[in-house]
Image (cartoon, one colour):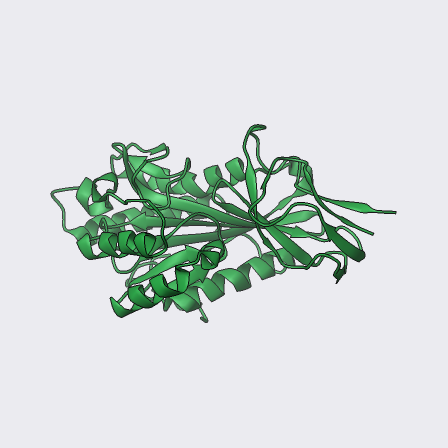
Length: 244
Length: 78
C-alpha cells in the first residue's frame, strides 16, 4: 500500500459502515479472506444500536444533529464515539474456525497487535487498558502514557463452522477538540446518562510525537500499520479498489 | 424435542465475565429457521449474533437487558 495519497479512504460514514457490513457477510459466506480498510469520515457521533432504546435517544439525536453532529448507529458493541477529521478507523474482518476455539480476547489482540507495533516503530510504548473518563472505555483500549489512543469493538457472526469476526479500532491522530467532547457529554446528558468524558484521558498521535510535521507523523504511523497488517496476511484494501 | 438456545461456552476466556442480551430479533412464539439471526448479546464491547440452532417455534427464557453468562440457556426451540 504505497498510494501517494496515503492508505486512508475518505468515506461518508454511512458508506464505511455499509462496507463493514458487506465485508462481514462476504467473510461469513467464505467468499473473501482477511481484509482491512483504513478510513476517515465526516464529523458525527456513532452509537451502538442498543442505545436507540434509551428514552431520550431521539431528542438527543436531534439536538446533536442541530449542533453539527449527526448520529449513526453501528453494529459493533461498546458505547458512544465521535468521528471526524483527526480520527482514522481500522476495520478488520476475518474468519476463525470453531476448532481453533477463537475468543473475543484473542480477536482484540489480533486487532491491536499491528497498531501497537506501528506505535513502537515510532518510539511509543503502548498498553491495553481501561481508561476511566475516556469515551467508549474498555479493557482493550490501546493506551500510551495512560491515555487512550485507540478504542476497540467487535461483532461476531457464527456461520457454518466458522465465526466471521469484524474488529474495529478508532485511532486518534489528534485528540478530539472541545466541540467533540462537548457533543459527547451533551448527548449523554440528553439521554439521561450520568457519564462525563474528560479530554485529559485522550491522546492523539500528533500530541504524542512532537518535533515533526503532523502530516509526516501520521503518514509514518499509517504506513507502518499497513506493513504490520500485511505481515499477518491481511489484505489491505487499496484506495482505488473501494466501491462504497 | 426441544433444542436449547445457549450463550456460547468458549467465546470469551474469563469465566466470571457477564454478557447482556441487547436484542431479540425474533419474538417469543415465532417460527424460526435454523441459522436465522434471532438475538444479539454483548460482552466486552463485542456484539455476538445468536442464530437459531434448529427449525421450530422459539420460546424466550431470558429477556432483553438480562445478564447472562457462558453457557446460559436463553431460549428453546421446539
